[in-house]
Image 1 (cartoon, rainbow, N blue to C red):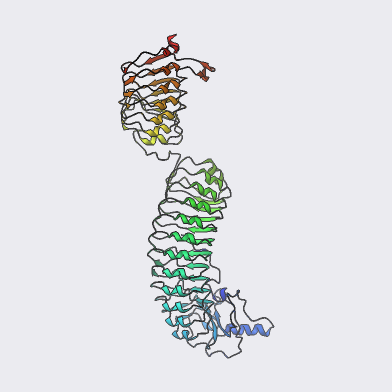
Image 2 (cartoon, rainbow, N blue to C red):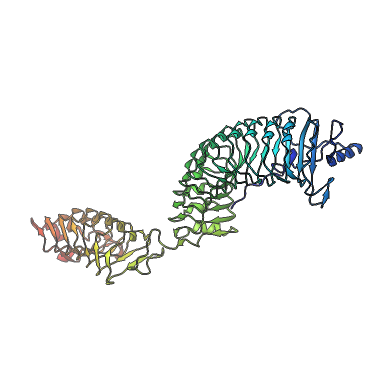
Length: 616
């Protein structure tokens, strides 16, 4: 599983937006009895030494009045053991309230135990409440919703609390910076009142709890600019379309490790300001990856949609993400068909393209070789990829730290070929001939035989093949042989066989049960030199005049034992009349074996047949 992008130390880690620093009691008033004042004493010592005692704070989101009191305590566990800052590790949270005008309560890593007093709700001057990394138990008091002056942080993370998120937190409408309740064992639903925090812009973190139910649709009312962390809960139902209204967000939408169902909302494409980290992995989402993902043209890294049940194709629109550099994770889904060639447009990619454990098929696009700066982790294993690994991809893989592609794929086998026990040893991409004459093969010719792009010779003669000649066989780049004679093939001769423009010999579908006309497209076999054998079938109609274009045919035009009618075309006299480069460009002429016997031909024998050389 992919972790969320790293959270800055002060994001939810402590007070002051940066983990906190010892703060001065600038009012000069007395501290309540029983409260530790280690932070104040340190500031006083600094002031006595002539140093500035005030903490270094990040720039505020808006002008705020000066703070009168800051209540600070932080345990530095790497330096102090057992006793520290005036109280033992595991001491209960102080029950004596600070003075009413206190603006900050910051107990960070102080090791406090016990419950949060409901009386904290009376400190209405608070602008920051940070109690991070303690061992607090019990529930969050609803009275905390009275802290309406909070504007910087409401940060109570990393404690074993229980109960629900109070709906009253929706009253904290002045809060702009941080609301962190992550890693607290909270249960129940995310309250819809969260949508009332209309001034909120920085961080909402409810991650690593036991929250359930849906993400409230009111989430779309927020003006959040970054960091919405709901990961590692038990959230369910479908993702709200209103999530697309978070169009101000620039980074860190983390919804991974939940139980969302339904499909990814197309409205994700409206979050066009996002540059980093959309993580919606490890759930139960179905449907396709929306094409609108291609509208996230500012994305540079961390688009993580792994371990769902997504199906369909990888959108071609991914090619629009030309700024994308690393960590595109679509692995462990059910994505299918081909990897789009447009992925090659993402030429800023440097690392971590993860497509493993899907059902991607077809050949790997050579355009992946355009990712010339790719350095590590191109993972394609455990799919159904086939054909040869493109040389362009092999070239860039030489410079990668990690390239995993072959395991669990079928590189080196013809895409689409289904193993057939009748044709042993057939299926590799380097197959150049299909040779199974006299092999006692029964059944039909597989249409997938048309997928062998390097086959120059097809020999299936003298078997017990039935059915039709697949039109897909017209895709083969045959050069030396098309032999399907002496079978029980029926139906028509496919017109697609006219694509054998490189075939030089043996066009032989004779002795079958073929019907219909002789395709005129066979006149395109202009380099055929011997054997146009179509005899002993049930072919009918007239003999095409286009066959007169077989100007290099010098031997064997045999068509007897059919049902041809009409006249013998005068163009037959042109057989063998073309210059033949195999004989230094000489015109060889048609030498022998012209047989139209046992048909229903009529009319006179054309005088043009006298041009055929064997008559001379």
